[in-house]
Length: 301
Image (cartoon, one colour):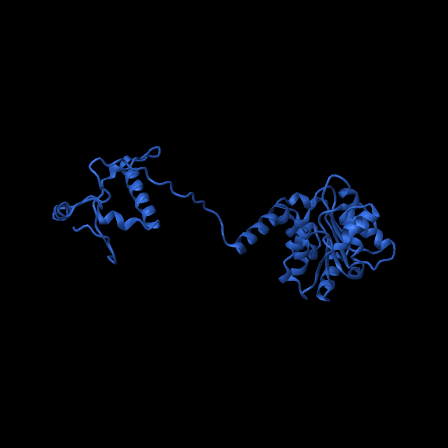
């Protein structure tokens, strides 16, 4: 029963004194059970901290004679190193939650719940993956009640992306949300909001930076997929550019958000005509997450 760290021993028998630990039994829990839990938590915490071996080594203040007497006794109580041993409080165990962690399974269950709770059947087959992804991104399938689109919108986007058309976005948040590995032709994602020329254009035209950034879309616009998830002014200016003769994009995903101008800009998109393909969400709701989710859904089809 010598006082020494366990070393390479696979099993070490040691005596403990459970009353050393203060315990607070749970309602209906026997005190013995709470004591066992406290002892286990305490020594497990010491083991994680690399401090367990010190308890087997005994009190470092023992003299050689005291150590000889202790080691020739029948047993030694693990952790007792003083005549007046304070009662120890068990460490607080880190809280652990039971939750689903597999990304693929989370996605599968989420889409299954949306399909079960929402009326996905009212959408054309080619639009159903897009509708599912929008509801998933919003965390609310009721947004689908305001979804509007032109005939053949999804097919137009797929053809454009497969042909290598760029994806033009109105904000860095939309760009960040696009899963570029899903883009079928390593399509370029264009965002001109932070272009050095944008601020000067905004000042010269007395408009927002988002609207000014649209001026720089001209070389990329014809046949592109445009995703607007932030500024109503960007969507308004895009429609004005097309009205002025700029090459129309293959598809406009109109999801600007806000209390001022968002609903109006999306209504203008839906009413624009000129065979402009679009998908939009009427009303004030929208956002970068929805715009990016729409691109991702179309790229994955």
